[in-house]
Image (cartoon, each protein chain N blue to C red):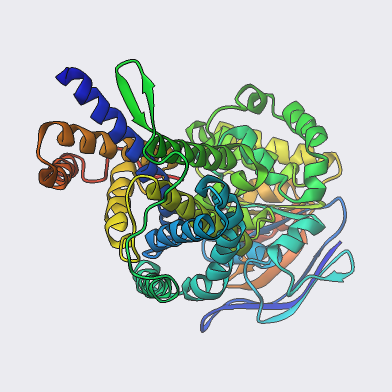
Length: 234
Length: 291
């Protein structure tokens, strides 16, 4: 579904990502793990078209998307839930969802998708007229995911979805993500929570200083002594 | 008797305040949302008044109807201005200062074009209802002023409903609150800013026409209007539509009140004095900044 080859991105003179090669197949849950500043958010923003790469190719469903605008990429169904949620904080829950379905294709299916989303997150339905910024962190993260779902994603990309949440809330969010994947959604998950991310992922990539240093099945990466030593403290 | 006189000048102050409010709203939005301080905002208001005046003189078209003729020109003019003048400087390190200098230049150009094509003489709208008044009980409402106030209230209501209820209006607010997320969900920031700027210029034109019903105007008048616009916006909260509208009414009220009790030449001194006091107590204005 998504095939990235030889992708390099620089911030000014600094190389943020170097020669990345990876792929995500339909229905998979793939995770990128790595420490702060490893380039994970830069990667997602490049896939979303907010950052343009210096070199390389990104093919989505056999179409080259390097050079496309964020608007076009969103229209193709590559949808990002950004780090820190980035909700429209002074707008209501419902308005946030309407903006998720801003483009006309998503807008046409909005009322149907809204039911799906409210079914999944009944709490959002109860609070649909509440101002988004006044909700708890967990509810805000749910809204961020719901906003992405009404955008009709084919590939859902999540950037640190558990950031700043209580452990209980984080667990709930990860359950939702697994649930979505179980329903057939293709997911690219970026996380610092190495253990959780690797245990739920089909495959994982380790990003270190902008380079993929390891890759493999989620379970086998969990067993990898180098990863256990540097990320899990075991 | 004096009680009625005071009430009368309060009402008339409120009417002018509504027009200040409308003039402030567009300025406030552009400032809050794009960090662009559009010094030419009041010049567009004067331009609107002049165009309406020209339509009135040449075709006998009432300025209220004239606005609907002028509206598309101001809207598209504003969009073009944003696209080719404002957008290229949006990447400047200090967009506030760059935009001020740029739009100051625009203001001078507009002022001089008006002087050149028209003439620098002061103008007033002379319509069928000039000099007529509406009597309600003990109160007399001058008709031109009432028309101007209604135009202003209508303009503010339309802008408010547009921002709150329409898909494009919501997208505007979304892109101001969280530009990056807005882009992720397919909102084209450049296009949406063009629309916002076009609307602001059009609302300035409407405000200018409304002002033309109350005061005479000449090509330099925008300097005075701009000071009032700044006041309204700083008091009302940058980017806050409702706050700006309320601040306009408040300043109008203050104007009317001081007019009722003090000689005319003291009105501005008192208005600005009270405003300075308010800002000393609440330096960030009466209402929060937001979009």
